Length: 237
Image (cartoon, rainbow, N blue to C red):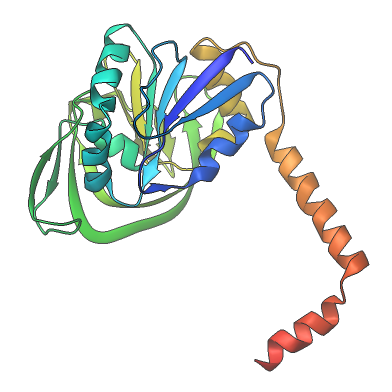
């Protein structure tokens, strides 16, 4: 496996299935870095995942020394992608005036994107679809987060989802972030994104594999389970 994707294991990591399409590719190595272990500088991509507590995991990230590792990796020209909470962490600051995630206040971000996130109690839940502006590939996914992100690097948006500009990127495009979970399940986007940052991978149809697996499971259940009886019991409760 020649292409290395590194993911720091945050203490409140969420939406782990974002990694499934990458793990399913035989040419990609997904390495989950445990607390206390350094982030490898030979990574082809460092992916900051979603988290149930952005501010708490930002503190946790620093406690592992990962902020220092990430800064060195970025200085060497490394590629970074933050999804949802990972995106918020990459910014300059997280403002939690209402104390939604703890004591009200401002929290210094990792500083790799020129954006600021303001936390609000209202959670955004949405199924979204759109286009990767760099490749033109279709993207499907979903959003589930609190907080709104804005700033200069949002002018370098790289996605149009539900007719809205979204995502942020550094001027050189090496650091990117967005709120979209599930984007790697879109085969065209995944292929184009990985090739763009140096991966040499065979074309794969992850969505087809998932559909086949679900169909096989449905057939197996129909052949081996009394579904009518199960539904009857469920309806009685």
